[in-house]
Image 1 (cartoon, rainbow, N blue to C red):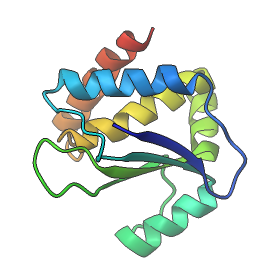
Image 2: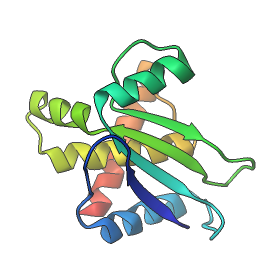
Image 3: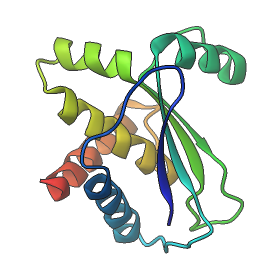
Image 4: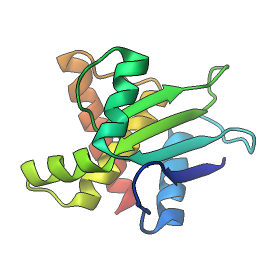
Length: 142
């Protein structure tokens, strides 16, 4: 499964990209999804302004966010998507949470994958389950 990392309006490169790709693939497989060479998962790193505009244009939300996940799959058990990640927001969230930037980045990266795997976070119960799954996945990375 091709996993790609892009930068849109900022200069950002993820460290240990192959390790992160392997981890993401492991999480996907652990949830019963098969990997295909024809399925793409794209991460697009961008600024707050860029992601805010996507939020307004495509979701009609006039708010800042750290991540937006677009599921482009046409079949069940297929992972195809574009995950936009605001590096500005991750830096700010890490600061406010007294967390390392990388820890917050990895949490957000896997959060997007969990959405593609079917997990939601609209209700309090869903958000708690999402956080539990994020923590479970992060343990696999270390």
